[in-house]
Amino acid sequence: MSPDHGRFSLNQATIKYASLAEALQVAREAGYRSIGLWREPVQEVGLDTAVALVAESGLRISSLCRGGFFTALEGAERAAALDDNRRALDEAHRLGTDTLVLVCGGLPAGSRDLAGARRRVGDALAALVPDALAAGVRLALEPLHPMYAADRAVINTLGQALDIAEQFPVQAVGVVVDTFHLWWDPDLLAQIARAGSDRITSYQICDWITPMPADNLLARGVPGDGHIDFAPLTRAVAATGYAGDIECEIFNADVWNTPYAEVAALVAERYHQLVEPHL
Image (cartoon, rainbow, N blue to C red; front, side):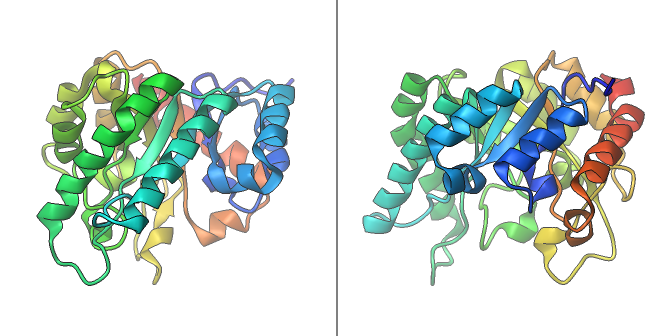
């Protein structure tokens, strides 16, 4: 019999090169009950086929990644981004998840107006909230580490994310607590308590490794291989009453080049060692 990992979910990014069918099979055979999906592999096979594969797998979809990238100035690019997010909400609904993870986007080309870009994140959510409520899918705003502020996400702390999320109904907008992006923040534990179980839509774990690779997007490590102390962060999330899935999402070239089943088994082992005891 395969082990049962309970609330632990294998985010598809951790086995990036697996097709959707392969990822579902790996997760199921490794004892996972759930998996976090990415839109690109879903779109590769088509939404109808993806829905059928998910149903056949018997797995729960913990989240769909990603929407967002809506910090552009008013015009065709911004309108297209909002339309793409509406499609993402529909995809999430069809796949059976209530969580669409948002990476909000960086500065528009040629712009240095960080405050303006942050305001436009709130404006975009305001435009999308009716669609989210209609779909029954929450917009999960993920703050990213400040080193990504220019090109990927102008929202960089949990406090900033909550300042925006709290303008909207909890049924429509929440936040993601990702250890890689947030572990450094001296105010993090207080902000997790502020978020509470109503606003936390996803808890994602991976480690911060050094030396950092040349591509800083690939600096995530297997839990236990880096510098993050998962115990206090997990206890803080658990203290809110959050009872949702806990995803492992890793961007790392060495991990991606390791056989998928080995990765699935390793990260589950580390979850049981480093995270589960503090829930």
